Image (cartoon, rainbow, N blue to C red; front, side):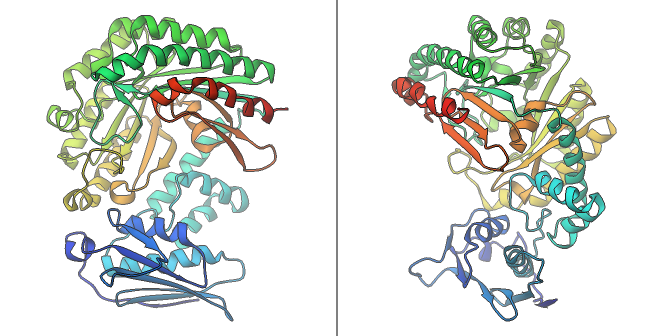
Length: 499
């Protein structure tokens, strides 16, 4: 049963007086749903500082109240003049009921309807898979729409991705692992980037890079020895960053040769090298990747407009992207991924569509469409105008879905990020047979991942549970080098897990 009072309002993203006026307080009464309520509120107010149950108030905050009552069990939410209440059914989750009443009052006050409804998690397809398994696909989609308030288009997308991921997940075994190798260096730092990476233009990075590379090779050897000792079966390899193509051609060969020498490749069916930015890729490096066994690469323009590339700090041109892509084809690559970002500053739905058509015309085997997300550690300063572009960014994502589907691509993996424009998603699209197994294994956490390099995290699944044991490497490259002996000693946790 729903008891809801809806308040007429003209507020929307264009009314910044409410949206930006103050900090926000979430006051929880007789419940402890702090994490999910904070994340859901961020979908409506992504730039605001949100505090749950603070010890004191300054008197100028916007206050959201979420209260749980018993007999009958019910949840209510109040924000400004909007109020919603829901009696919790016996089979329902009180936390989901809290999300629904919060969603309704925030929608009433702001006029905003996040397309993923009350879903705040990274992996919506994982939720869809759970409900397909218990109730069937049609019932699962209806659950997304009517109980999670997701847009029907998003429910359909989650179902398609769930089915695609399942086909890949079903190929793994308890002994299977994937290997991630991190190269946290770039030619320059993009304004939207939040990854820990060093610009190779800086004197510190140039001095650090050789030592980092030698330590990385040693860690790969140690990790490979553990995998062999414990009977782990390597399925996929992903060399990511940063920008791995900041390696020289000789270093690229040495890296891939070391990986091959350290691991048993008899069951490995995918080696991805994230070549990344066109300003660090050469034909010699592409040949070194190819001859070293990398059978899949990413060439990531993010946009096919020179002015936007310059604005976000990418030191290459659209022509460089074309040149690098053709070089990769000459070398022999038959599995190339390309990335685009919807919602970049200065972009428009019309211009994004042109970028998308330009990429599709190159005929890569897969295309990943990201939604711009604001990270506190990036240099991109979020403004009210950029946050107000949720509708435009949604239009860009819809266009991508239509054009890629009509060009023969299908969505096969998906994830979401906090503070993405429009609260939207990132989706990998691929031609049949060109999906990346690693992306699915990593995103759905259905396989152990051995990880090497600064900031890398080894993840091991506890058999028979959904628990994951994580072993963290030091975050920064200088820490990785300076404390390398301790890092290697920490690998004993990986050995111990399998004993």
